[in-house]
Every structure is written in C-alpha cells, then in structure tokens.
Image 1 (cartoon, rainbow, N blue to C red):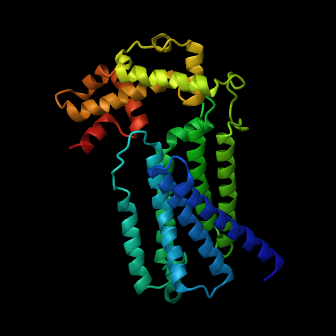
Image 2 (image 1 turned 90 degrees about the horizontal axis):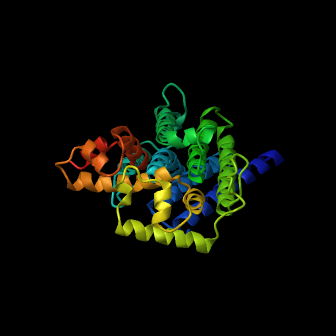
Image 3 (image 1 turned 30 degrees about the vertical axis):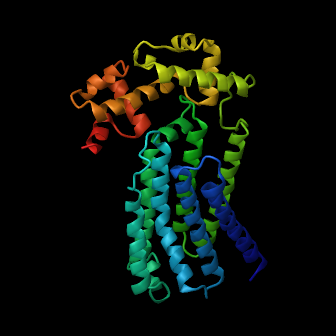
Length: 352
C-alpha cells in the first residue's frame, strides 16, 4: 500500500470512528435525550458503518460477507433515518408514542435479510454495480436520493431562512440545513464516480462531520458565526438569573391565563402583564428562545387549536382559528403548518 493510500485510509477510517463516537454521545451521554436525538444517533451510526464498509472493501477485499452485508444494509438505512430525524426535528408538536418510523426501517431490514441470504454480495456483485443490470445498485442510488430530496422539501423554510437576506436564521435552521446538505454531499460523492467514490465518500463524511461538530460547539458557546448577522443586543445579553426569572413569570402567566387568545395582544401588553420592560422581554425571546413575539404567541394559539380540533367537533376550523386568537384564516393556517408541518385540515384527517 502506497503512502498516499495509507493517508487516505487513515482519514477515512478516522471519519467513521469519530462518527461512532458522536453517535454514542447523542444516544447515551447528551443531557436532554429524546426520540429526536436517538434518531440522529441512528443516522450517524448507519453512515459510519457505510463508510467503514467502503474503507475495508477497498483496502481489504477479503472482508467477510457478513460485514459487507451489514454495510449494505446501513446504506439502505441512511435515507430513511435522515427523513425520520428531519421529521422529528421540525415538529414542535409530536406524538411521542408514534411508531410510523418503523414503516421506513422494518421493510429495509427484512428486504436486506432476504437479499443477503439469496443474493450475497460476492456471488452477485454485478447486481450492486451501476450498470444496465445492476438492479440493487441503482435501487440504492434512487432510494437514498428520494429521501434526501424529500428531506430538503421538509426543511424548505429553514433553507429559505439560511440563504435569504430577508429572514433571520436561527441556530436550529443552520443545524438541520447542515445535516441534510451534509448527507446530500455524501450521496453525491458516492454516486458521481466509480473507483474513487468509496474514498471520496469517506473523506466527505469526515469533512461534514467536523463542520457539523464545529458549528454545534460554537453555538453551545454562544460564539457568533461568520454567516450570522450580529444582534444589536449581542454584547448586552440578559444574565442567567434574570432570564430564568422572566421565563418563570411567563410560564406562570400562561398557566393561569389565556391572554394569547386576544387577537390584538402585543409585546407591550405581555411586558405589562409580567411586570417587565418590553426591551428586556424582546431580548429574552430573541436571544434565549430564538423566537420573535409573534412566533412565541402563535405557538400557544396553535397548541390551543390542536386541543379544540380534538375535542370540539362542532366548531369549524375557521371558527377555531378565530377563537384561539388568530386574526385571519390564512394566518391560522400558516402558523399551524409552521409548527406541526401540517395544515389544520390535514391534522384533523389524522384524527379520523
């Protein structure tokens, strides 16, 4: 093995190894574990297996059939886990007991068990090459691509916020866009060349992994990134004690009242209700919650609307929107879809 090949092997394997570590972190060591972090862990894990399989198959052709088959199964799971993670990430309102994600995973596992038994890779490697009769190779390419494209569709609002000068993107926007585009780059690297695709793909994963980790660390430390517009309050953040005090007053207010149902409810009204200055309240919402006043209040209205859709069948959707404080049907639908990724009508159908 040449020195150049050794360098490629080192960095490619390093990307996979670090991917495993990051996967374990999100699954077991992060403070606020949830379904979302578990799905992110699963996504990083299957990508790491896919990269490791490619590295070993390129440099160690005698790699066992079992490991190759596990790697190919991971290839087919990258797209599904990307979609599952994105859908969980963008839903503020979600069903914690939903098992719909299994519909994207179980068929892949069953199908790959069948293929691994009847069409093992070494005896049927032509099926995995992107040639006229390489059915499995083309199937993997298309399946992965479709999931990437649909995931981009799901995060279209975040994409717009990140690349538009008219909207202020949040750290969540940057995070999810980085994840989806990173997986898209890996797909592109693996599927735009033949012999070199394994190593290019492995190196692309190492690169996107480090970029993602860098952004995450910087955001945790509240460091202003080069692509963000500095806030006018950037050097005057509310201290932890004061922000916790404002948060507790807001929780108490909305646990005891439904002021958000008033269509003309404004930032100044909320500031008066909690005995806080509008300036400090605005800073808290923007810097601590990364929301403007309108989005913050609309979340309460949408959550109230969800309960009314579930329990008040005699109300029309338009009446529910007005009852919850929205000034118009269009603003109700827009806020509802932004929060739940469904229109009120689509949500109501899921209850039938």
